[in-house]
Image 1 (tube, each protein chain N blue to C red):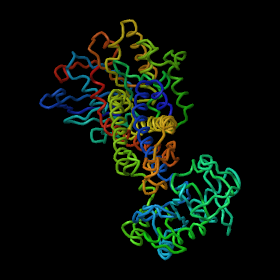
Image 2: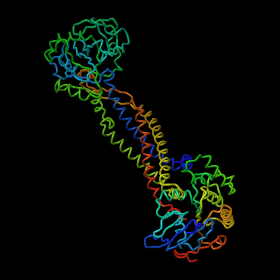
Image 3: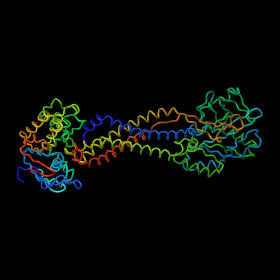
Image 4: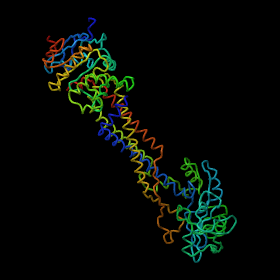
Length: 416
Length: 222
């Protein structure tokens, strides 16, 4: 391989070089963009759960209460027994569990969505600790309440006011801004789990629909090993029965409805097509280029270049062109992914996970978590794409070089 | 084969399908000899030159170059043999358009392990001899026909060949330039002692050669 010859060939045959590089770079860019988009949708699907510090949420559906009075469970989140929680906790792959108790409280003058939270747990809605806008977060052993900021504004609730929830008095110790939260496990009022348990245990209406004892919960937030999420989801269904709703990043991905989000198979098929198109473009362009150089190859062989010399020269040219195409493809993909990262994606939150009663105004509306598509190109994908370009260059140059090197110099040089 | 014979072809035939282009030709070239192979277009002289130089294999017969039979050699062995022993000059120069004059001259040396400076030094020497020292870095597109052929002659000489095969070397040049090129070939033959086997269809050019061989219908007439 002669470096001087190679660089001059690429420099002076600009049209050939540019066409080869452009053709392949489009294929490589397509490959990178497709995979980045697929990855971005996958990451987006993690967001609703990630925002509450969980990988899986679990709730169980039950019957609708006959009378909407006092504290009741939403029909999409009824009792999960303490023993069931313990069983889930012992499943291999479960790294931690956060619990919550979601109640609808219908007082004569007002309806509350109340969420009892474990204060010290880093998994689940206790993450709201960082969203306190005024006052302070809940403290252990105190019957006190946090109120959602917008709700407090709407109903004129002030810091240190005392609110009455199902005939229980709670001083308001702070406000939280849940507007940026995941739309899952959000409420109007947040109470210590113990207080919410007492409300649930003392409600006859609630007990008549779904028997409840302190220690039971109706929302589970689970941290799990990423590779075990799918198998854990089915094991939990085994423990909690058919009426359980297990939300995982995969279940959100399915709700996204995008082709990129639907399946790995689509991305794989599209990537394969992009690679095949890239290879065909590279092969066709370079085959044309090399065919144009048949006489030149004949001269090289006439003056003493062996087949191996010819192949290694053509291969090196091809590898360099494809390497440059890989880099250009990567740059195109970087620009495209920057553009795509401004795209907004709406992740629908399933109605079962919406805390608002459907019969209240706005309660039946589909809610979405809206976020910017987190498109980025991982360095492994970038490295793979450039490596693939080099391999395509090597194979294309090698195959075409082998073919053209068999040419007889006398055949191309005799027709002057 | 006498000691001074560097190239001999014995009973050479070449067939393309049913068409026999070269018919049982035998020919010997001695060291330092300048031979002109003359004949009309299509008489088989270029094919004979290809057979003798190892660019093509005969259907029948054998070629011995510098004491070695080349008809049984593999393609790569032939290429290496040509690199070390043979120079070519073509009618349409066949310079590589993307390489400068000196790089074209050094083309046979590219696959050989040597420094770029050494290649350039050898190419420069030859281009100076061809009075093209001032055109070393020019691309072929910037050279006249005569200059291109002088670059091609320098390329043919860069590996210190024992014999140069020239196929209609002035066929694409005007008469003045053609004469100048013939002058260079004569000088090479006399001063460097290199053997030349030149194919031409012009009898006039053949006058300067030591020996004239006429071909007709694939056979040697005289």
